[in-house]
Image: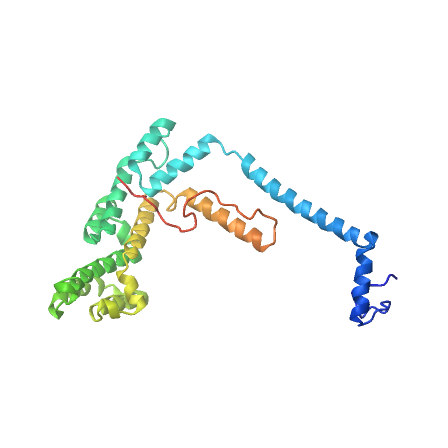
Length: 291
């Protein structure tokens, strides 16, 4: 059996634990190509394989060509779901997709109107629009209805908190208390989470904005409007027999999941596999929902 100069426990190793002898052995190895060349060749073979795998992945990505009709369908689905009525109308005419399932210019504009009402804090108006579009949506979605009413209460409190130079009197909160009593209190006993949400929202009237706990400040964060608007848009799409999320968003998420899973499994992948979307991982809507 050949001596292994790297292992002091090798019974055939004449160097034992003598460092100087081991260093001499290392010099001997580097001076003997037939010893180290097989390992060097193996390294280069593995490196070449990794490069070929990465090149093949990139080639497959470049060579994959979905049909034009599939691309048009995904684009139309995005324009409808995300609320671009003008662009959807024009694209439908240019691609002969005017008869596409789910294409309803008026329906898109109604969703845009509801979305914009919520974003501007006019929740009462949004609820009226929702009932005009489909009177059953809120009746069959009690959680969504509660979320809208909670947001409406938050908007009432927000307005009071900003009055009198940020120093409102206790009586200024009367409209908020009356609204909570008539609209939210009857719903609270039906679900423990409703009761907790109502209590937390009512607590906004107790603290000064700069002294509120973090979880309460989140209720006053304008991003809550966007969250509720998203939930309403999904409910409206579902009621119209459409998918609640644009297919292209699902494709992007599926691709991100596949890349993460592959990297976790130590699959050879190129370092940069960006798909070229600005802010592709932020999950934002960008300029969606425009008239």
